[in-house]
Image 1 (cartoon, rainbow, N blue to C red):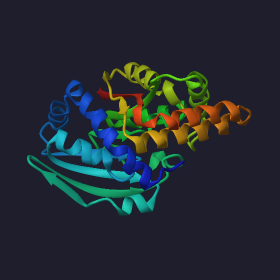
Image 2: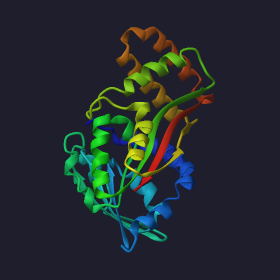
Image 3: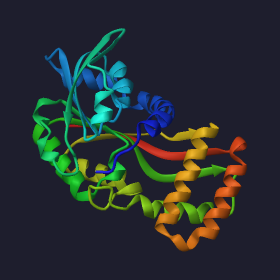
Image 4: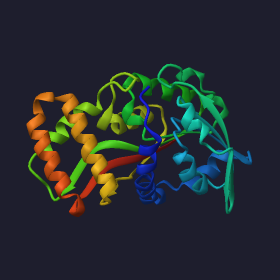
Length: 268
């Protein structure tokens, strides 16, 4: 599977945190956690593609109470940075580590041990067949799922510039390239996941968790990343993309970029 650097994960985490704060009220995660616990004092969670633990840091205080997390990732450097436990007012979370490549060994995850299976910024990277396989495991375990920060295809620049639409179209096509899980779902991931979960009889709640970016370093990273991906997708567009990139970077100190994401909670 394709990985992400610790530097990129650190750069995006504040924007992830702000986006998820906006969605948290609609999802009512504390009530969800209480329902999943039942008579068990410990809520057992599996975090797929956990990276540096941003999902754990974001969710654990919102879930409350005693928690046991299984942190799953293929990158030993990221796993090595994870704490064994975290705690705060009214909650305590212990973490165990499992190093596997989810693209090749999805079946190796012990889903039956969890009441909640979660992932952040993963769903748009995977294929329809991979998603179907995951949801089959989830259904067999009768677990809830929380997929956070899934790209939904919405991108809005302010101010708008010539070339925005062309770059976005090529970038969206690049997002659907194989990331190791088969042809990626990209902006279609949320709709497909909702349809599959509805068919399983799950109760599904969606909440927008958009990035709203005005900070220069993150804007530069997004502009550079979009330009690079667009040229990978269509090298013949180098003049259009080069001009777009130059104009965007020149305006970075007075630009706002909104990138659409959705948080998806589904209860059995």
